[in-house]
Length: 418
Image (cartoon, rainbow, N blue to C red; front, side, top):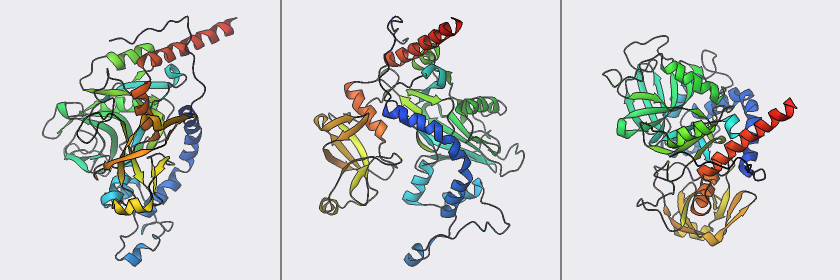
């Protein structure tokens, strides 16, 4: 099904700058500053991860030893050192650490300006989001909660005992979605290749790099004794009308779960970022609306929030957004603890939208989630789910936005020629 056409004589009237667009602008402006302090942030992270495990409650109150003195050889901790220390974490600490290493999209609640010029789009595979690391002759995939999904040989660099090249400890890290029906790891991004970090590279360069480098290996070949699972790159298109139509309506070897948009200038930023966006409708996803614990779409919208020490109920955003609070008496009677993820139902009449942000007047507790879930919902997800029930952002709106971009470019060209 091709995206509907929009009357070119009626330019798409873009709404006033949204809260999500302000975050996009801010993220682009600050990512260069994050590059400058990346080493300091890595050292701070390593300082926490590499500190000795406390042997007693009293020792736990002591600050971790500083790594400014470096290790015995006088070297700073490497990424591999940090990863090794992270692997020793357990429970909630482990789940949170690994979940924060993946770049997570915001949910698209408005069409970005310059969609055709500044963004790429792909059909997102349905499946398990994970990070895949190959090093020392073995390949390991971990889910967002830190659980090992597979430990296997692969044709990725140093991913199996066969054909080791260069330093055995050289590692590659891929951002993937494991698609169970065809047992394939679909690559949505690349973080590191043969020890070369791509954190500070633009999305456009990372897409070029992953396509060119994967062809140098046999990782895309069918499974074999030294290559348990096949790897395939998710096709990425410019967000033109043709690219949008291909991603939305084109056939794929995997089950689609919406569209994934990348700002072409975006670096790989761990955590939630407005520079990657996910959008879906009933045509390109089987999972438009969230379901309850029994897999049914509830009559009222459900949201998952985290309980903080002060009783506030917050999202997973950084900084978190509070949607309500619980009093101490209720917390104690319900045997709740800070960090618990709680599911609430939301009545339509209790919702207000103020300056692009959602305010909820009343939350009804529906239950506590199990430990496999790592984070609460983000604000953009809650807002997207609300809009999907009432006034969804449609494919027609995305098409209109792209066409509006094209008209603006043509108008500028005419003015320059005049």
